Length: 471
Image (cartoon, rainbow, N blue to C red; front, side):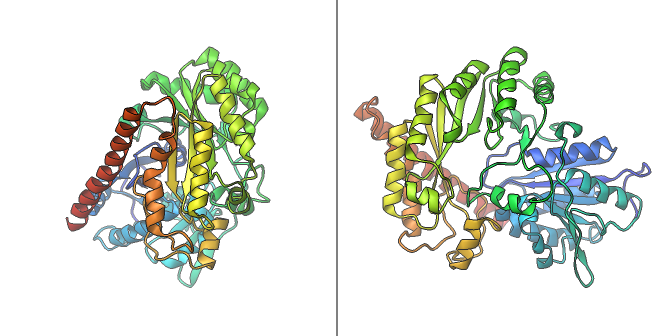
């Protein structure tokens, strides 16, 4: 295959980030892969596919860039879209022989998906930075890339299944993720960072539970950039972008006590920009809350997920008592930290009563704000596989988002789709309807505002998506 790039050995790699139905934000994994490719001299172009990007625009951009290879980042709810788009790309004159590769959570937890399509040439089944670079370098040398580890490839007689690499142990050895290929407005609205990889917990609905099994013998699951490198990345960011608040997206920001203590101490001196982060109830002690506050933390996001302690333990595999959750929010409030509670509705085993308990628990903990999502059965996760076994998945239609629409792909015994949707739309209204600090008039205004806002947003979105499909 001839190369489009005039410079010997360099490749034009076109990256596609499906983000329909969601706020467009920075994809840390994709940016890290791009940074490694750029460091090796390859040219990268990113296209973020939101609700307004049409297929013909994607294909025209690929042709104009003269791509030598195409890479997708994909979660399971975008897999069908990625397969369909890959087919349209491969059916376009001039693009039939351009190899297409897919990475991200879906490729890792469902590597056998390579057998579902003839249009995708390879799935990255592990961390992608060095493995994808090896693939691209081999293509540049007109060499066979199908023996590259960390990948499953399409073969003439079935899938070519290569071995899984060890996890990258030294995150400091990686270049900082490439933010330049993202539009600047992404960082104005949401300036996010991730300084670690891996999570010590095994929530049944999360891909981390699958990752722990997949990478069982492949090195340390929990890895951090050094505090010095983390702060250097923030400083370089601050030189380019003006952001009033930063967001640290690590699953549990203070999961490593030593790293967390050093970070808090140095961050205050070197950076000082207010930030938000995530933690778990059992990790937020009074001392940790104080350290968060003194270092410049403005808000902590804490996973509640369900107010039914039995379901939280037996279904979600979150062994956390109500008392721990209540105490964590108390510690945050005592240290004048804003809080957001993460909540989920519509998972297997849930009932109207368990949703009521979630609302009641949120009323007790009094978060500054709440976030509620509709459960999605991600492939490869314990709860996702349970939904398949129980035939709860009513159809194979993928939802691009589990925020904002209240839709569920499940048909659950004891809880209808309408009840799930209603509980989603009413959740924050019911939580704050019990707020004694708000007047009756304020409560009604809040109710009307949130109700109209949510329904109007869904209505407008449905119109835009219908126009997109017609065009």
